[in-house]
Structure formats: C-alpha cells, structure tokens
Image 1 (cartoon, rainbow, N blue to C red):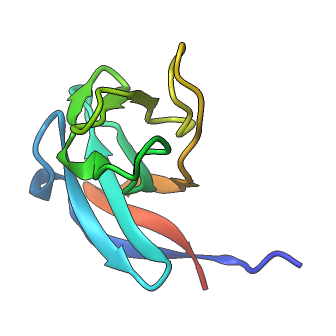
Image 2: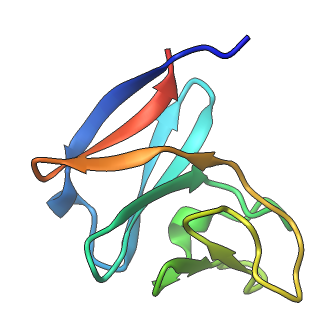
Length: 107
C-alpha cells in the first residue's frame, strides 16, 4: 500500500545557490535539493550510489551533479549514474510554487 505524499515547504528558491545545493534533514534521511542554472529544482537522497558520498557537496552542471568523492555523475531528474557507471540514488519529488521549494514527502 502506498502512503500519500505531503508537500513540505522548505523555503525560497533564493536560499539555494544557482548551480548549487542545500541539504535537508528528514526522518527518512538526508535529502539534497539542487537548483540548476535555469532555476529548476530537483531532490535526491544525499548519497552517491557508489560509496555514499554527499551529493549536496558535489558540483552541479546542467541537470547533473558530480559526486565529490569519486566523480560519478548523477542525473538530477532520475537519480541514475551516467555511463559507464551504474547505480541509482532515490529521487524525491520537488516542485517550485510561487518562488518557494516544496518536497513531496511521505505523510
């Protein structure tokens, strides 16, 4: 059985640097919230699928983030590593509403 999502406001988009990230602690774990150069927002579990590196400390480029530990590139939209690497981190629904970032978290 699926539990419904509850949209949680985590603050204004301007709190996240362009091509940067902000870490949010949640009962389900750390979440990395990313802002791209075109002001889109994405959220992933804050751990690389390779060695659990903190993606929130990685370099954001385009719609991807490079893990600071071993340079794995993770697609922000899907959470999947880009080839030749393989693996996936969890994706969290994120949206922008009136300039504020909301995350879809299990109620």
